[in-house]
Length: 509
Image (cartoon, rainbow, N blue to C red; front, side):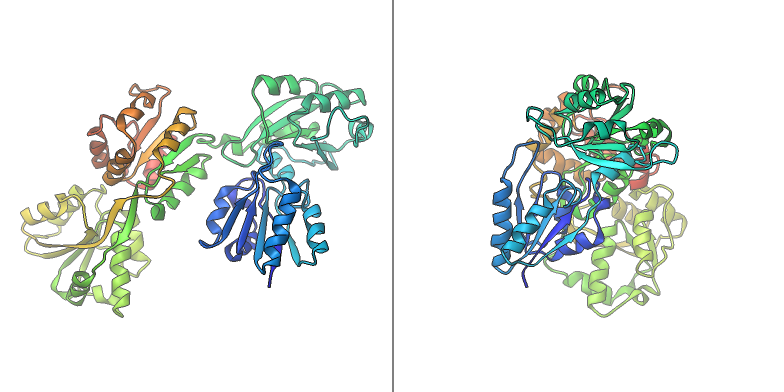
């Protein structure tokens, strides 16, 4: 049955979307979203869902409100499930009530799913509690979007100015001077603490702390623009003491992640947890092979091998997919010793019931060879499930050590054709100063990155000198760094431990 869901998308941090809203997005036929609704939420939508952007950015409406109402009614009358995704909460200055009234008049079923309003979330992320026993026992939410030229204000400025409430003004940046003037004229003392929070709860958050008398001039000088929230009251004094979000080490730093889409989430989540603004630029795509007959034959004859060496999480994943499709489980490896090139690969094996017999101290092929030599690899039969195209260091050195090695391709990496990997868009973001770091997690990410973006176009933006203001290039390890050198760049950042955690730590440092 058709239904329209008015969903609160929350203030911007994707983690603040409610579970109920996520569940509805996953089943909706149509998703209608606003400027303030984080685009990350669209990843939850069905691939065949109709996605409609209706704008509403600082007075610039892609679609006027009456047309949005008509759109919701039209899609619902066609028997579709419609998710109307609105920034914050639908019923807190979100015009959700008007949309609900239109749906009722059209005889349509609807449901409201509340969202975390920016009025609560943005101050919390800025270190400002809206109520506090010493400072404020109530809070008022007020629109700052009022026309300063209209004959009579809808606000009771005297009540707002003389009360002990914390005042939170939505959409008030353009009218800051009007708001502060009215509050002071109505009796508020000029030195009342006031704060402006821009893009609250997102990696772009920044906060200005001032007084109600000076905040308009200071906001203008510092270039504060919508969307920003104005908080007025004694509770603003607590910001320095209670601030936690703006102390995150990578807050506001733009980091390009070049990993394949399927693998990027781990690195992205770790960086975002530290405040970074992540820009996914997938340079490689992980693909299954067209023919797995060789792998299936190898699985049938696993007892033939004394060692299986897994060189990546993907190698484990695709190997196991075929293993399970043949009706086998971890017991099929019972007589075979297993090596993993690093902790992530070892973890992927553990999830499938296999504890690696060997993990090298350094997570590169050379260290695997050195370690296996000490474990008596000479004369042993070794199977290496890996990418179709990969470095030959491991099999060649094992053969030199006297091992009999079979290479078994189980997947392939190809150049990503995803729309995100748009070099012109990335260069535009770089030119606007949004990017501070570009990360590379394998040689193939380097090679494919520069097949998508001309190295010469990047060079002016990269700082070769330590301590420069240019973009820093971060490589997960020495092999990746050597590949980067082929394109005329040195890695500014390289961790001691060649893992995702190591890379993140090195960027922070």
